[in-house]
Length: 133
Image (tube, rainbow, N blue to C red):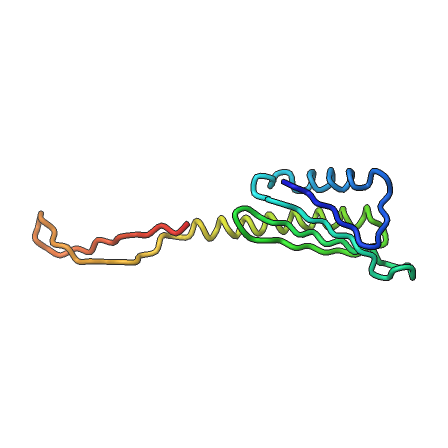
């Protein structure tokens, strides 16, 4: 799982980038085999005016395809990362669970043909299934 941290007009304290990576590893580590990349983008919404203005966007690229995007805004970088990481873990879990449910759907009948049964000379239907993965 590759983690990329990008900042736009936000000043991160020394060591904050490593803390962010550790926090995301902690929250998303159990899904690391299913995550290709995590992009973290910080921006300052209000600039110099202050207020609730640190915006964090997490873009999580899943394997083999798909993406989960989580956003949060808070005055503190640590709080915004913690909240976004927790929400991202729940969102990735839901996305992977939906995939599992789709994959475990019953097989679909795509072709059916009548065939003569040899034992008692009656017609039976035999179904051919296509497994959808």
